[in-house]
Image 1 (cartoon, rainbow, N blue to C red):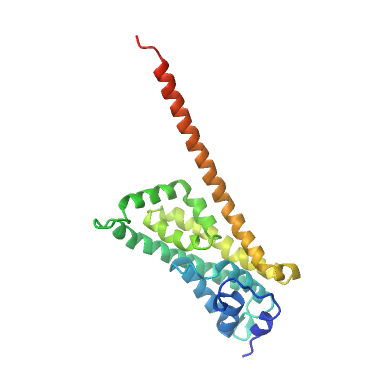
Image 2: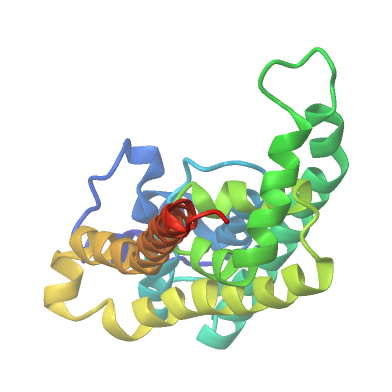
Length: 244
């Protein structure tokens, strides 16, 4: 069996984010003929086992580049893009299931410990309230935010987010993230400008993903300030009413 991974790796600009063993091209190249299996395991671990240090976004993008070049193989044949996307998306969803189960089973026991100074039941209640209000958007958007996508799955379990809602939006987010970034790499990765500016493009993707969360936070802050101001005005008006 012949692999063309090293040749593909040499054609793209190297990613200098973190140590070499965390660079997407190095990871895929080092796995050789088992690249597709390794990619699925990495995506699963990052989404469900708190491995927040793994390069999820950039790894998917570069996986798309390697797929376009025929460098990710199934047996002696280049893996088609639909198969790569399908397996990576399933891995992401299974990771979410695992993370949710961990949070559901282990989280409350930790937070209910009477001798704990930091892990309190009120934190679970606040988490539950957060997911009741913002859970759908949080699950989808968190896919594109490093570290957050790793932790939010367990927190959804800890907060007892409705399982049906959680898994529905996990599917939406998983397809948008795993399939979307891989397809972007497949079609855009060999464009010279994109190939030479992968780091900046991936950072831009993260910033665009975080933007709706920032907008929502600012909007909630303004609503709270407006509510406090309205309550203060009402109290002032009540005090001015002459008593009979």
